Length: 281
Length: 276
Image (cartoon, rainbow over all chains, first blue to last red; front, side):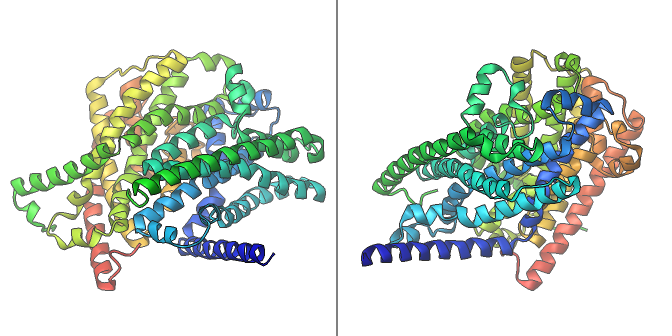
């Protein structure tokens, strides 16, 4: 019992240390907060303005025909905010390892007794917190302007859905971390994963406009399911508890992605240790 | 007056340019995964942008050649803006991160040429993207990209690169000052996308915001690029646009020289050159 207690306490210490370090980095570069809050608005505004410039007054009519809502801005804003969060989570774990390689401190981390999954994985907590604040900061003003009544139960469920939705992304983040360990250069792989998820998650368009085979691909992505759930709830006033099938699917995806990712990460980390390639870059 | 040794002799100048370009190109090709990653990700990013835009168009335009040509040249213009915002700023940033910026600034090399190499590697990336994206547009949408006036197209690309260089240096000076360029670059990128007529002619913007577009030099470069490739009307007469672009390029390069020297001097006094 004492051993378990000490294990939990030690891991909490690691999480606290990583949390403090990451928040310190965030505070050191305050302009990033501005970017995070403004980005969803910028992306939404960009698509809206391009649409308006190309089709004038009819732009909203055509949009409504395909997306099922004339509320272009909120539709795009929800998708863009989830896009931002997804990209942050996917990048974080791999980038944190890469940054340690650059600074020459990766091997020191490996000399500590800390659990490496906790060490690298806990990066997601401060970044997740920042991401959720971003989502709130982005969407709440718009909901307020739209005077959308939000049920408190839906709000709790919404946060829960987001957390469940973050799990598979966290798994993808670990795959990126494993690739960083193995191939050193995470940017190329992260770029492909980010582009793939961004293109087929329906962040800014309904996936029904894709060819049927691509819709199957799209539906296998957790980001598609999260976007769909949040959009249904906030834009189409669908109650979250009526979407239990989608939420269960998301939880299942979380487990599968996470299990696969941890297996891949452990294997490649072991190989990097064996070859003495941990800090090479 | 700029007074680095390289400005006194053409041979020294060329040697410095060669060294800078050599280093940058070597780094570029040392990470082939970047190039492959870029090639694989580009069509996906294109889809991420084209599908939301298609939502606003009537069905008949989904099959129109002009829609995809506009989109293709929009993506090319966006790449030019990215080169301006990221190449020199990021070159300075990466030297700061690997701890070599101070050593570089101890040399008597021209400050602009030190980082100009990154523009060369970015231009290689741009050229690869130009060819590759046209292939992707052909494969995905069956549209072959045309260039109706090749000499003017080459001139417009040259202006795009010169403006990117000038703007990139001014921006690089800002990076030296504020350190983390990512946040500003991202915001500026969207600002330019909205106001420079990247995906549509600026004449389609509401009249009230058009003056903002006319103040941004990239508006004219992108306008000339589109005029030379798909024959759209220029926002000002062609001769005026060419003259304006020559002046703006020279102005920005001059401004870049001044600002980077000024920021370097301030950073040296404060001892903040290598901070990041």
